[in-house]
Image (tube, rainbow, N blue to C red; front, side):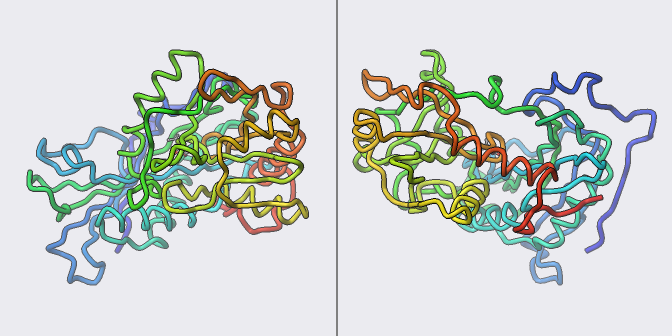
Length: 363
Ligand code: COI
């Protein structure tokens, strides 16, 4: 396949705000997007159904109101970032991990595979074209949102015969308005995010739609997010929807295992790799909410934090369950959380060596 490029006239290009510290998460979009089509009827051809890959001006999509995505949510997405280094160079963080996960998510929703190398090269080309949009201010970045939708116009419940895969870009600041400071989280008792055998391990938009009501109720009570428990027993810690969850208990880092109902986070994987390399004790295992309460009571709950592309490493200062609230590490950022944050951000922004080969140069 040959990537087609159709650029906006130079005098129509937008730009970053003068004061980049005003950037919020996901509100501003760049001038161009990548888009590629799929049709089952073309699947016997050499590109296995994918055609017309294009970088074109950012703008609305025209879709049939009967498109399967609108009715049966055949949609998966990804989130990754491009970072501007001090020397002006631009890098992506582990982009292939996101494209691999998008393929796995798509497989679960019966969406056809795509050529990951081709999409990565197209993404690099798009970021190169949009390089002026990669912000310079500390802790800003260019958030990348690959999106994959079923577009066939048909009301029968079945996998779509046609798809769009597109990538949009958004210059962003911190995901949480509070930046790198401890957040307050409510352990959700009534609703569940994902059940065994479901789609919890995928980045399906439906997972996020299903989380909105609990999120809104928690938000109205003053919490930043909810922490989900397992669907079967409501005893075990799962994740925070926008982040994987970690605890430091008695000096050990513990996090729930990838049993199928939580997202296999790229940042989660990176945090685990770094902590193991530092010789820290790390356990991926089931964690009962009761264990966290007991650890809080007996003083062994040292720290809690979340990890995610948007959230980076976010300290959790308070966790509330039923009618009790646990203040963690005096509501302050813990040592392990700070060390992981510094190490990760150091690699991402090219301030420290990248021993893992995680950073992929764009230009
Ligand atoms: C991300 O961390 O990139 C996410 O997709 C989480 C959220 C913004 C939906």
